[in-house]
Length: 332
Image (cartoon, rainbow, N blue to C red; front, side, top):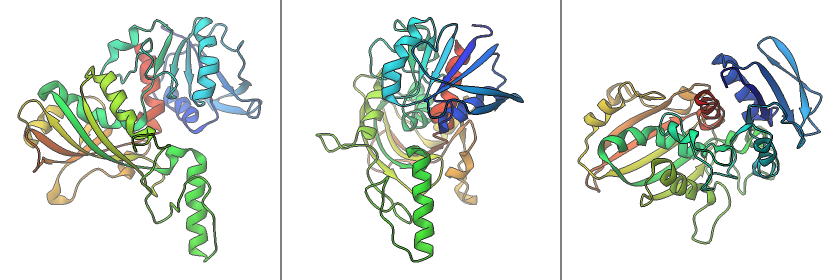
């Protein structure tokens, strides 16, 4: 594993492209890189460290000699091909939701629970949902100090969370509105341009969407808190990239904003940007293309005891997906 042969499955997608960028920017010590995608994308070339690499078609025989396989091609592809990769001896790091709640698959954020990556009986490690990662980057240091009890959150999720088609839909709608032309929403159930939509993913029987329940179930697994209480509303907003989350967090022990800011000092992957006097607080553009998540608007909650209100922002394509996977590979 000191100089592994790495494969990216879904290499031509938005997260696959970002994985390639992270491997290069972080000087990941691989000895060979294999790029895999659908038959439609096979034959294309991608540049890595100044060299052109041919994209190959993904098959069940693609994983001979692969040490680490980074998957970002959707849950269906992961369910079909990840077992083949693991059977061939590769450690799979999967970015989809396919294995996150599997008891035999660790769910890892390297700054929070890196040791979990070493216990992988199925040969698969799961990447958490992007909003879960961004939220827990701010909450985990506070949990370690004060004991997290509950989370009430509202997310403000960029259209790139829906892939390239989400960006295209926003651009097309804005252009149509600017020129007085009609349009029909295709990706989202309602107009997204100059609007917000309180639905991300499909609704479940209890009225929450699947995306909203991910923070509950994944947060419990990552933090080892089976009784953690979470209520979340996920909202799609007309922003290209980087998700924002408004969080009310209640703790077991007394906490105040000054103590919280002190806790963050020196913690990897999270920076405090919080100066209301100069109107300095995190916004999506501050994190786009950046590794770190930002936290600000830290204040005492006026309703609950031992509770803080936080505003957290992070690049969901990078730390929320590609970077987190590459960091797991670095642990290996």
